[in-house]
Image 1: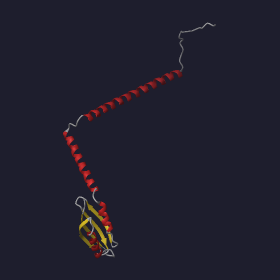
Image 2 (image 1 turned 135 degrees about the vertical axis):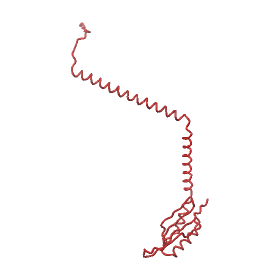
Image 3 (image 1 turned 90 degrees about the vertical axis):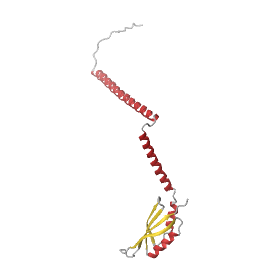
Image 4 (image 1 turned 45 degrees about the vertical axis):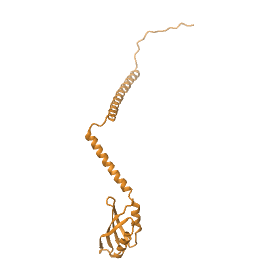
Length: 178
């Protein structure tokens, strides 16, 4: 067996440029990681503070009565608007349009239909080839179940057009059956 020679004495050795560069790179990386850690820790603290504030606000009742009444007023307005829309959607639109469309004659052209759901009225604007066609159309509409009180609001003969059609406006009450 050979004798083992252990030398525990540190000999002074000079470091190379690559070793010094590696040490500086490690220190720079350590510094960057430390800065990133501090930034993330600050963000976490800020988010926890915001979360606690939101949780506190959610648990506490509204103390500002003006704000509470304003919210109640807005809620009432939204509920009223939603009820109005529901009422209008529940109206018998199909029956009205079916009756008006079924009354189409080859000698009458409808230009506009303006139902007023609040007042239960319908305004119909059209053009007929002549006065007889217009009167026939009015009589036909008077027989429809969804319309009552059909009357001629105004009419005039289009003199500038060669065929001289009659442009008219009718008003009617919209009969809404429950």
